[in-house]
Image (cartoon, rainbow, N blue to C red; front, side, top):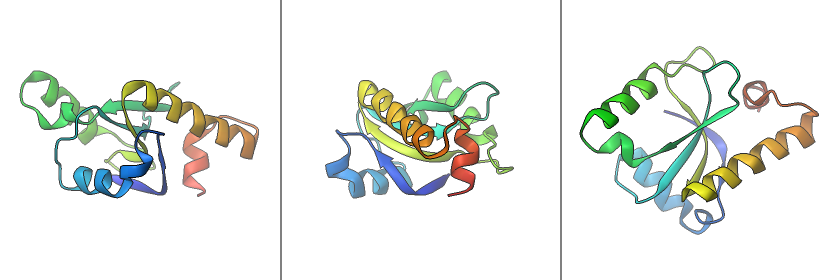
Length: 118
């Protein structure tokens, strides 16, 4: 995984930011943890994934691991994480906040280009 050096955090994740990063790096389970990643799909700005889907067994975990393994942004075969949230509604609000910041700074919605230049 690649990390944006100035990660965005949802309101519910700000207080636990260091613990959450540690859990992600060490592949530990955190209930209701979501990551916002740059999308590698045409027409999508970002994707939101629930972290526990990667850690549990079964077909859903295999599907998500394959998505992450084949995820390609900036010519790299790994996901580029730009935000962390606790709870799906917090993750949606986080993505809205990121896109608002990008629009305010650039006047557009080219999310990948914005993070490439940061």
